[in-house]
Length: 163
Image (cartoon, rainbow, N blue to C red; front, side, top):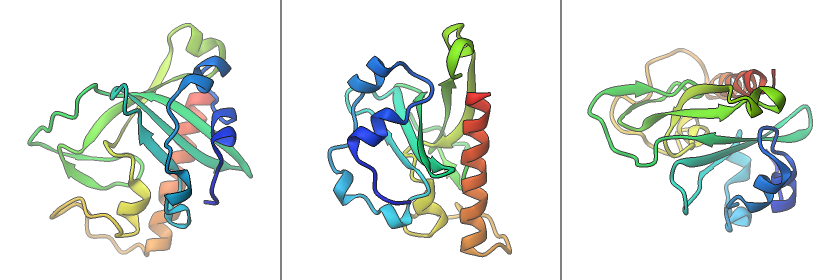
């Protein structure tokens, strides 16, 4: 993924108002992010830990989602699997909920998915970040095939939010 500016990110949100997008907390270190290793940019709001954001490029255009997750990252002992990158974590996966885009979202409809707490799927898939022993299930896919699967899962999640 190529680097994005704060303005491009704010303009890309599909499930919140322009005012909400203008007020949300965008990371200050955009220039320092490992863009070449990112399938999407994901971050938690440092002022409101229950808010998270995900931005990717679909069909040549940035597309972003506002998400709600648990306010705290209380670690549970059970093992969970991220639905985007299929990385297993012990307590490192949370249900993230995205309000649907448009009228459906205004009426309170949402879509949920179990995602890595730190939204670092791209780094886990590439082996650049370690989720601990047993995090990567044995599989015969190449890293590139796992990247493509993650991209497809992100696109599917966004499609459910915008449907």
